Length: 160
Image (cartoon, rainbow, N blue to C red; front, side):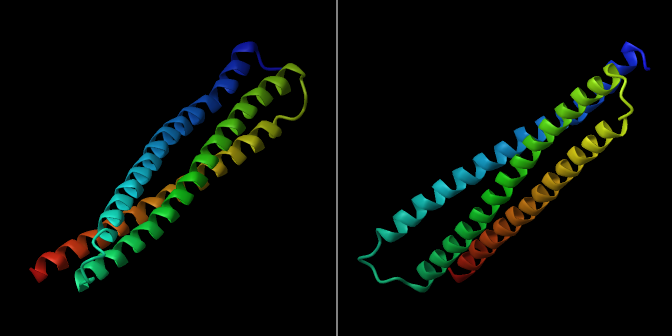
């Protein structure tokens, strides 16, 4: 049977991954806030555009509406990806805490189940990996959205 310090060291190991998840939760929450802010800004722009109904819609107004619809679609997809990533990170935190508890229980009860915390830890790592893949997808979508917006601005300026 391992001594108390070895058990505590093994129980602390998941804390590093818990800390990593916490950092990802914090940064992902910030990304969610930016998406919400962008949706609100787009809503204001759409409202202003819709108030110009007494003037016939020109080609630029139509293009602007199309851009806004495209942006809202992308923002919806981003919000869903971010929600899923946050869910993954919170789940991973719970799994890593469970791993730490399992290490203690298995060691204290002197059970021949040393593989169990390892399997649980690997599960948490897989969930953490899934969340990071979602963040990569969201980041790519965010950059694509920004590039589309920049393309619109560039073509608008070229018309003038």
